[in-house]
Length: 408
Image (tube, rainbow, N blue to C red; front, side):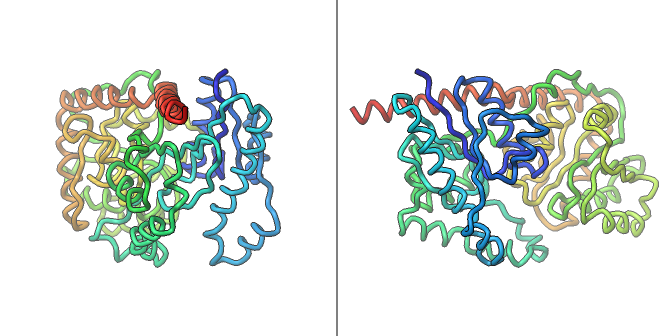
């Protein structure tokens, strides 16, 4: 009898950010690969899950007087994730008890933080992909919020405290680690065993992107694109400043909206770049955005804090060479000089100069851009969701089998 997968995530949604979207994708892909998959999520997702998404085999954790109290008292909101994990695991135990002869795997796909405490089931426990332990480079910490500064300063001390107090994290049977060494060091500090960790990609790529014609490159093309939510840590202003260090025909289209939109428009005016930068807002449909990308030479995303970089993965799947910082998630996705460029962190001026240098080089050399495009798509093939899902299931199955053998 195949095992029952019981997935847990606070949010499973297309509307509630990257973590919620990733949890939704994992659930959908696992349902294609396994006959018995149940998703547990918070009741706030009910309307979307039952309505527009029409998902089957989803169970909901409803709010209680305790969770409502935690929400109303702002300093206590940090306890909402542990509350949800505890309630969801209790529900998972009840679901597992329905078929006692069947092995149950309780898989908490979110949150992806290595710090967030989680309840553990008496069944086989899987966590992840876990990412995190990513903060602004030192040169940008004057722009940190007070909360981000507290999180950065207390991150490792709190993890060491978790070790002292025997964190529940260390009881996980398998932890999928997506943040490389920075995340692994955080988990080790909390007392997690290296032998129970497996390095995996953070996220997959929709097969429909890889079925589209690859963006081919030839000759000179000075057009670059930056898309996503316009917030400070995405580094949009750095790209605008980089244009002052490029050839005068280099052009940038910025697709998106957010709190940095007006400051970026003001910066464009201040630098006299109105003829070289276009603000395109969101496209009415995702298909329109994807269709537009074939006209660009590359994607630029110098993010200061992205733990992964779904936009980078999607651009690479389409054949757009990315230019990013050698920091956070993108540095785990890109092979510098082969599938894209990684710019060292440093002062804003140094980063702008690095971005500008690579934009000039990519714009000028169509043959090199096409080689990078081929390499980028080749790398993205590894991230196909069905491939990742089967690989994760195989690794979970192997660890479960080994654990069962050890118990005999």
